[in-house]
Amino acid sequence: MSTTTSPRRFPSVQVLFGAIVVLLGVLLLLDTTGVFRVDDYLVYVPSLFVLLGVWALVRAGLRGFVGPTVLIVVAGAWQAVALGYTTVGAVVAFWPVLIIAFGLSVVLGTYRSKARATDDSYNSLFAAFGGVERRNTSKAFTGADLTAVFGGAELDLREAELASRPATVNTVALFGGAEVIVPREWNVRMEVIPILGGASDERPRRENTNEAVDLIVTGFAAFGGVSVSD
Image 1 (tube, helix red, strand yellow):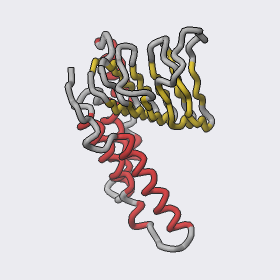
Image 2 (cartoon, helix red, strand yellow):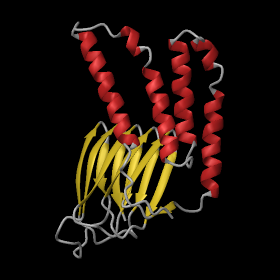
Image 3 (cartoon, rainbow, N blue to C red):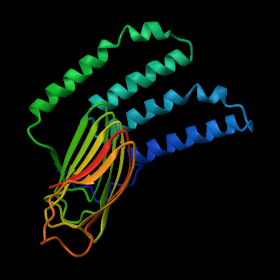
Image 4 (cartoon, helix red, strand yellow):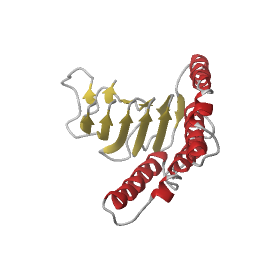
């Protein structure tokens, strides 16, 4: 198990993803308001998503490589077309590669009997075109960020203990799903904003939950969902 004591020294994949979206929004705003023509810059946007996929591989230690690899391939092909190195027709001819990648994710998931355990105080999970699962056993859990883009991210906190209350899990679900599994007695507050999506605490109501808030789940879900279960 990992014993990282400061897992947030480097920006998480979620932070990098958000920064790319902000940068893209700023460029589009400059263009639509006529302040500055950004056509020459927008052509390199796919490269940013290639870097995002590479960073996801690095952060995951090359585990759960299928999703980030698909992101790198798709964004790389998009960049090649944008720069005129190839055509859309030539790229489309290789679409069965996505089916192969999906098959690999299914096969690898079959041989993975349970979620990988970690005792990091902070977790950063990124799932794109696939799924990622983590089981946290930290005795001083502080929080996490979960990003699911056309995929699923699951964080199991049933064996975790909190450093202080409340801990915060920030979620982003775009055409995907993020699930947080918590101990039955935890008091969880949902602050997720659903945009054509859903956010819910699926646990049955119990009388023996803690009075103080143990965990706050924030973020947003667009064409996807965020859920809490036990």
